Image (tube, rainbow over all chains, first blue to last red; front, top):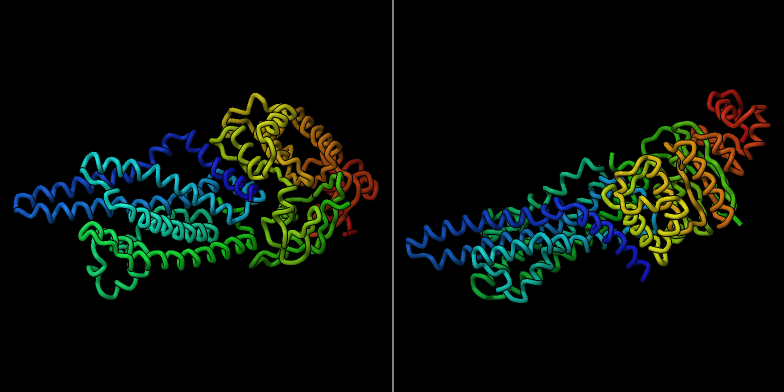
Length: 271
Length: 247
């Protein structure tokens, strides 16, 4: 157990040392979440001001909360997914995978280290945006209460299983699949219903949305922000679906890792 | 005592017409150095990749330090290591940080002390706080060697360990490897195109061609068998089909 924790720490140390030596990487972590929050915050403020003149201010202020809450929570899923996928890509870019895979580091330890790195990257990326939303727009994400932790954990878990699937595709198709590390979660955004209820989607698309943990999290978020109610049913679905998708992604990763060892892809993955 | 036992090892890549490695068998005793020689495409890299667990063999068995690599490769990998100038270390990390990472991955006790020892022995002290990416090719090779020795391996696989080194540095590295082997009893498997190096370091040489071991013996035995002056001439005889397969 101690040796296993040391191996996980070793890989974590490798990535932390990289960030210590590369300020552009540190800036990049917080850049997009902050930018997104500023743009959506200004947009929301504009609409709130316009609607304020028509006497519907209260309604629109609630909408502002939902909008900013959606932006910030979605960034948790996005940053946690990128945290895993980009940390794995860093090993490919530095042509270091050969050394890593001939060390006693188990695949499960590699994944654990990537998940741990993802937590740190997500905190470093999203927390400044959360604080800035409070300073600029008086929107306090933590006002949701302790339930926010369950929302965040579920979105982070979703980011992890999506990234495990991405890493599996990189193992299968090589660095050519690395564009997926940036784009794949954006493709799920429309079905995650970040800014609108699932009922807004065309009926045939709703089952697809309800198969994603994120759609349940955002339904739950709107229930808290709009009605002050905790939608335990949605949280239960989000947690169950995450467990299911995580198991499927872990199986895919294990299979692709073995297939890469059969094909010799671990030797040529950066090419 | 055997450090490495390889039996009937075969690798056929999916879709490949011919096997990259074709039913090779050999053993490396503890404290011995065995050279793996062959032209490009002979199967040396594929063989080393299978020995390291990077590649799953199509057939055959590998026992490394008493562990079956098919079932228990991590126990063996903790006591082995590997060096190649063709696998890089993260460029932005300093030499010290890189070695610290691998000290943790190999669960080395007292990493700072071990890094200090290696820095002294391989003349790396002045390089420890420089980013690995800013080193010369020769310096990188020495750092890669330090990484491969971080866990005091009992079995060390070396892929062209002195490639791109000037003769002086190459000699220092070879001398150091000889000393390490003598003092630690480590077994070395060495793939190299430097015939003088193989003659100097290896107790036994495996000559590979088209995935098969076509001859084997000590450098002196091979040179005598082929009636040549040195190992390079033996290598050319085999590469140019001037002899029959004798393995």
